[in-house]
Length: 108
Image (tube, rainbow, N blue to C red):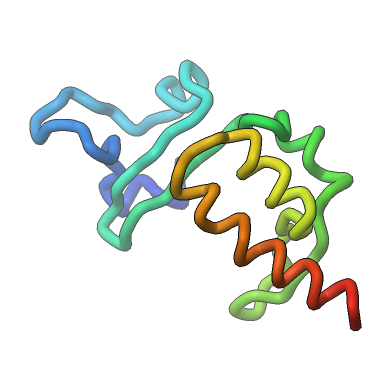
């Protein structure tokens, strides 16, 4: 909450003027949030289809260095799995590219 509060998060796609308070109570009451901020879109997901919650996904992550920080990212295999489970057209479009990347990484 403290990291995003000053960036004016607002539900992505919601009409302007919708009463929305980005606070601790809102975060406790919800699970998944798709937000627009002053810096762009961000998704806060407590659980993802086909993957479960953070603790369920942890064994399928790897550490990467991004912008001087260590971050956890899903492995390509798990990312493909959860995108397939989500079943959205935009995910199916990405799966083919991700499978090529996975094949290339396994050949190295």
